[in-house]
Length: 317
Image 1 (cartoon, rainbow, N blue to C red):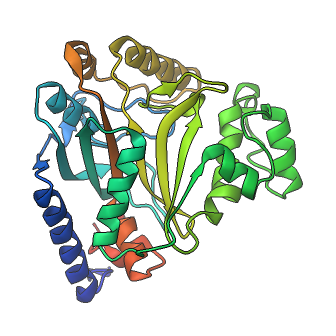
Image 2: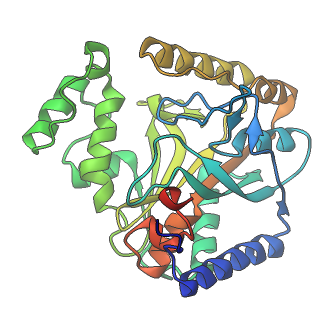
Image 3: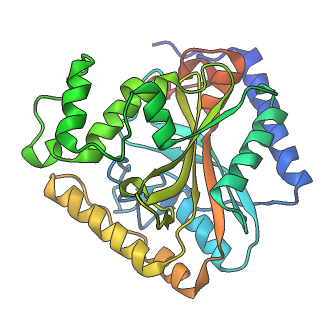
């Protein structure tokens, strides 16, 4: 067995310096650093994220989001943290099942103002000073895929993707095969996303309303979710939201995701009822964002694999 770390000590020193810069950034802006539980009675019911369960029926966090929103509802003001998070079956060149997430929330911000702050943070961490771009979801698809993603149905998206030589899985059920967002996600991962942030980082914002997750939806034609992602060299680094504050709508979304998971034979964790209670008491209007620290360090150092920036990835942990 190879007991040695996969990251060099120069890389580990660079990681320590990055964490110090992050702390300095938020200290200068008087944003409170917090710590929330890693272990919870609840878990995300997100359709694309699976959680580790413990033998006593609890769950390892995939994000500190829910607990941080409870702090916001209790009157914390702006907060941030560096949190260990865990995601089942995520392992690869850009994934590890345990990683470090930087997450923060800004009362009074919308997703556009939070994009400004994300850019300021990364510039302070030696990301490029110039060349940053911003594209709406529609603009990015029109530029890199050649069509408006809000206008095509699932069958058209699938057919055009196959014309590009990307077949997608052959073992989809009829229901999964008819899911429009499934095919949009394939377009994003295989065609659009890899073209984003080729030089300096690029923001992608205003997603389809069906991909709102925990974001507000803006009522226009077509309606769009007020959220963003940040890409650098084609790799997603950050996911941000103009946060949903409506408790009824949030519970409805959680329950719809649980139904989706149950219909497909997936594990169905309990959703966070304390979060719903916090929203009912009043979550301030705010925006929040999460950044994968290891992926950010990869980009800053020009590394090609996440193992190169971790002391002990999953296969050596």
